[in-house]
Image (cartoon, rainbow, N blue to C red):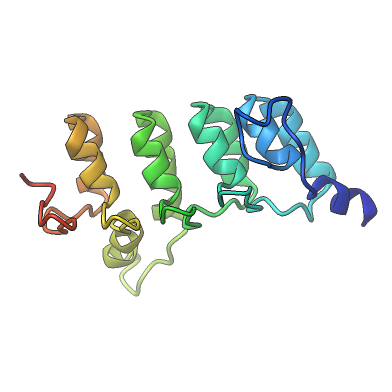
Length: 178
């Protein structure tokens, strides 16, 4: 409908120098306006929750950047995708690791695991989960590379638990195990 089309349109931030051109959903997620974000999504179920700004960031990426776990959860509950890549090839999981927010990383990993189908033995196909956990950006860095570069042990352990690979190498042949 007309309102939904307007809401999916471009929203100019107050300062063009702080954020790229983005939608109202991006702004609400960045401003940690979880109740308003949820109300907007509920009232307009056809909103594109995965709309990308001028540098291919989604509202989920904005919520992660502002460390808004509640906005992250609202967006995930309503179908925001974790696997969308920005201009650098980074996904929401890359952004969460870079933000050093273990709660958001955990939330994304649980969503990745929870969205997978069970196999014939009622178990999750770990290779499918690991594929999303080990996605490499344009510099061949996986989330585990990023966590290892900062020495964030709790995050490293969590990524390994969900199938993070110690053998993926970046362009300089560095693996997370180093």
